[in-house]
Image 1 (spheres, rainbow, N blue to C red):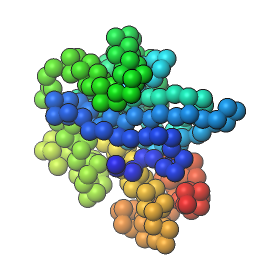
Image 2: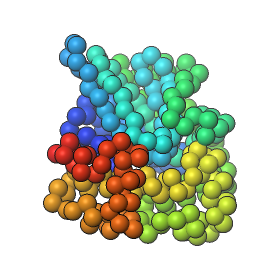
Image 3: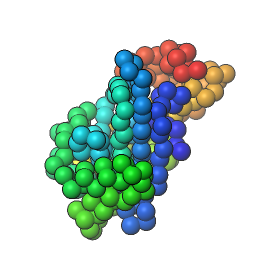
Image 4: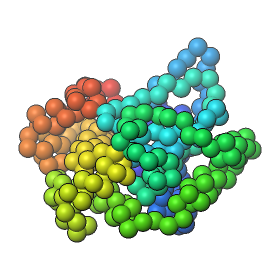
Length: 254
């Protein structure tokens, strides 16, 4: 499981990630399934520095669409519940929204009663694979063919996330052979964010992971490893997006 994005993994309820089938791979990065049973009167807060992407989520009461986030987000879990989510690739965006920018940091409901019914039935019988397959089928029926622009957007997002040498919009654009202006258009259209925002998120996710797993590594060394000009730039970005300093996070993440 890729640990990036989950700020306090020890506090997670039952949680797993599952790969998409080959047919759905152009649309779904992975599925995530969360199940919880919180004691009466208690709340479990889940803090996330989410991947810069849309998530289609089926819950007991609704189907929701989580837009890309611009800062740390959280959810308070109470009682008993579950959620089946699909971390969407850019190519899946046309299946769920006409304007990815309009749902930044939002969680609108999706009118998909048949999807909800099928997933809820699968979860009721404990068929996690069936729940994921239902989401796959719903998405692939709505995006039977990936457009050229969508395929480029998929490649661009993967390049930014996986290549830590990419530090600027120009770097990202060159990786897939397009102009910086085209790169800007693709990520705004299919994700809702700029390429630079995606680069910043990758670096902050990696920084958070290193801070929590390598307590002996100095913050300045982590900043240098991730391509920051100096430690103060990392501290500034960390505080702006997560709301606390790298040192503050490290103390709470141990």
